[in-house]
Image 1 (cartoon, rainbow over the protein chains, first blue to last red):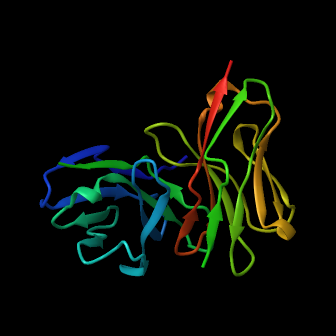
Image 2 (tube, rainbow over the protein chains, first blue to last red):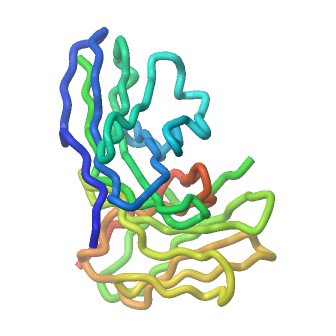
Length: 114
Length: 111
């Protein structure tokens, strides 16, 4: 079964540095998402992306965050000037048509900010 | 606004016993409901989903869930729990644009 893949599985970064988390959605999917799970807390929606633009974002997704689909296969989340509170598990997800089909999640990238 | 409540943060059951994990939701229209499972350090695996039709839905690994509109509930059940079911279970609502998750129920299975 096709999978969403995320790299790296674990990223350690110094506070204030920029980090890029990478995702390869399922190949025929058109809608892409990022979620965040702070340790011990629930999974929270960050942003959805369709047709090369953001379609919805949460209040968490402030100016330090950006997303991009740089080519036909990758979907990236960039965090500029990371803060300690950005430490979390970040999940990428994708769906084919966004019409309430279940989102397929990757295994996540654990981001640790030192 | 859509929301999900999972009232049980932690549940312990004996292997072979039955299981029910509770989920209540709030959604402005017909809900799209999901249960995901997360093993430690792993991603989110879809167990089952409800969009419409039969209110009792079957999922993978022997799980089922029943949608009860009158109670705004979507409880997850399994008749006989296996040690490998120990994990965290998330109920979720929505689908288009975003999914809203509950806080999760951590399931411990004892021999």
